[in-house]
View 1 (cartoon, rainbow, N blue to C red):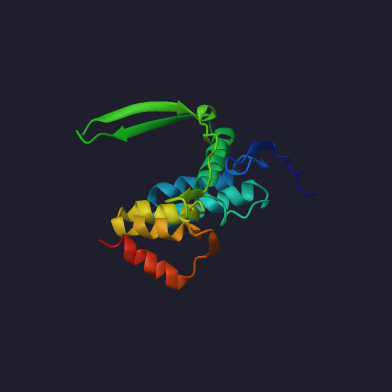
View 2: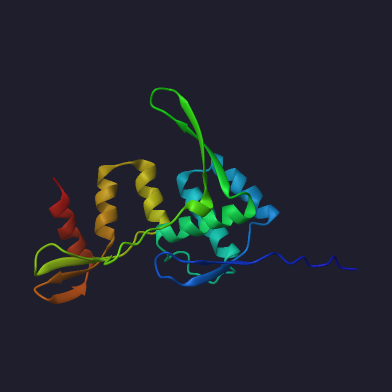
Length: 185
C-alpha cells in the first residue's frame, strides 16, 4: 500500500519587475535542509541554491535564469515567509566589534517602482542606453569579489541596446570592448 500524497498549500505573489502573478509553495523539508547548508557555501553556490529553490517552489513556471535579481530575491523572501516565519532575526556585525540584534517582518518588504521608471537612460538628447536588470548570478559575482572592475563589467554587461542619433542597435562584443575602454581610467 502506497503512502498518501500530501498536498502542500499554494500561494500567489506578483513579480515586482513585470506585475505577473506567480503561484508558489513553501519549502519542503528536503529543500529546507539544502537551505541550511547555504551558510557554508561559496557565493556562487548560494546563487545556484537560491535559483533552484525558487524554480522548484514556483512549479518551474519561471525562467529563473532570465529573471532580474530583485525578482529572485523577492520570491525567495516570500518563500521563506511561508516556509519558516514572516519574522527574520538578524545579527549585524558592526565595525566597532559590537553585534546588533534586530528583526524585520518579510511582509513589510516592498519593491518600489517609482512612477516614470524606465530602463532607458538618455545621456544627451541624442545618445542613450537601454539597460537590462542584472541576474542574481551577476550580482553575486560582483559583490562576492567587491572589485571595481567587476562593477564596471556588470554595468557594461547590463547594456541591452544603445541609442545614437535616433538609431538603435544591439550591442555586439566589439562594441562592448570599446565601451569597456571608455570606463577604464
